[in-house]
Image 1 (cartoon, rainbow, N blue to C red):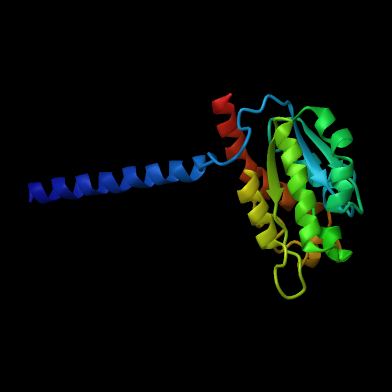
Image 2: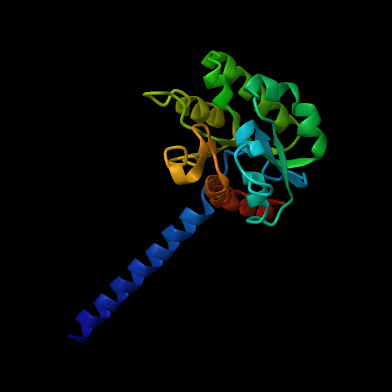
Length: 217
């Protein structure tokens, strides 16, 4: 009986240790494919269109402002309403590269979809944007958003760009926000509560990345 109890205790201990190990792996993640983990930049720059600028939210309710209260790094809002990926690329030097970025969070594509910009053109502009940010020595996180009336036309594009360019993919950050009347200000923009949820999801995704980057500095 004593032998059986000893075996049971050892087995339970192994199960607990395995669970702790797996939890640790899940938290740490694998960021080996992310470029510029040792970035010497000093700021987190949120770059994109009206979803980054914060259209539909009150003062201080835009997602970059909320994000700045969730992570211990300076956060800059470089969003501008109406921008396509091409518009963002045109102002990249002035609004991003000149501001010593450590991590640039790109949330773009909505206006490309609304204006029916060809997917190939959107991909080319996002790809060039990421390439130039990497050349400047900063990390890139791409926020994937679901765009399309019946299918997710942009999801594969974001995943492909992130994989090819060594960017960090943030998936599901906008899920359910624009389909919930309590979380949106109009059909295409969140309200303060929606932006807060967006910021919380992005913070949860990038915190492990930033922690890994700190360990490698």
